Amino acid sequence: MALPLFDVVRDPGPDFAGLLGLLGASGGAVGAVPMSGGSVDGVPHGTTIAAARFRDGVVIAGDRRATEGNIIANRTIEKVFPADRYSAVAIAGAAGPAVEMVRLFQVQLEHYEKVEGSVLSLEGKANQLAQMIRANLGMAMQGLAVVPLFAGWDLHRSQGRIFTYDIAGGKYEEEAFYATGSGGRDARATLRLGFRPGMSRDEVVRLATKALFEAAQEDSATGGPDLLRGIFPVIGVIDETGYQRVGDEELVALAQELEQELTTRRRAR
Image (cartoon, rainbow, N blue to C red):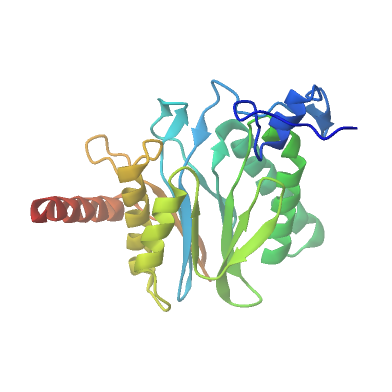
């Protein structure tokens, strides 16, 4: 078989699904689902999520905006969910499959605990989620990718841990923080500049809120704290006592502080 050559206009570059389509092989399947690169129109997508460790646990956060292309599909979607008492999942990607994946993940962890009489290790939970993401690869090739963040309190190590994934189910542990989604690059930059070892719970909650706030300044698909509508990020804190959601009262104060900081920066220009 001759090596396929394309001109600069038709060259699919690194898009493997696009290459198959140009070669007339788009009817092939991955996981019994036909591949056709690109995204699916009309499907809401979740955007920016982040997680960071503090000295007694881990914080996981997500903005509230879902988009359909350049349209805001939902302003109040929740992207952070407790997986069980000691762990949580934040979702980015196609909202429908992501939420269904989280629901199934929650049921599987509860079922394991009831059958075995013990809680699955944090590493085991992370591996289980990786398998579910890998099983979604066919849909990911159709544009319905799900790329979550998983964080929790490790009962054996007595510390918070963060796990990231790729669309093929690859699992990677982050030492300090991570952010992904459409505004992930800007959120990571804020986390990188503000993070330091040994931070307190309040300091990391503020840093996570600021990361989403700064991402929203650059990425139209990310929704920042909205004082007018009373919409604030979903932020969860996980430590040795389990998962707790940060109250809106605390987030209102942080949002006001960040807006004042932004106003001060503008006046200083």
